[in-house]
Amino acid sequence: MEKLVKFILKEITGSNDFSVEEKEDERGFILEIKAGKDLMGIIIGKGGKTIKSIQDLVRVKGRLEGKNVFVNVSEA
Image (cartoon, rainbow, N blue to C red; front, side):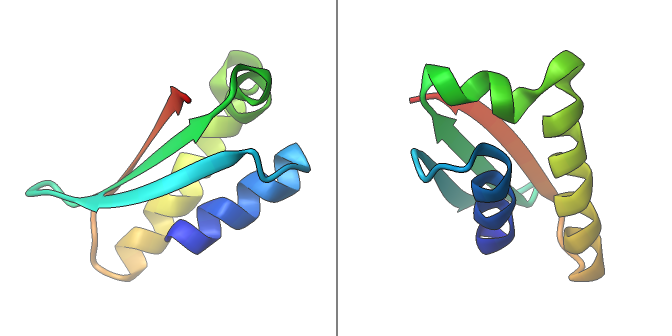
C-alpha cells in the first residue's frame, strides 16, 4: 500500500518532499502522509477531491487484499 501511495503522490506533486508511514492497529492499516505546507494544498486538492480519490483507490486495493485501510494527511 505504501508504494502505491508514494507513486500516486510523486506523480501528483512532482516531488519527493513527503513521507508515508504505514502502521497497523486493531482497525486495520493506517497510512500517514506527512508533507510540507507547500505540498498540502496539492495533496488535498480543491474541496478535498484529490485526497478523497487517493483514499478510494487505497481502500479498493485494501479490500482486494482483505484489509481495512485508512489514509491520514498531516503537515510535517
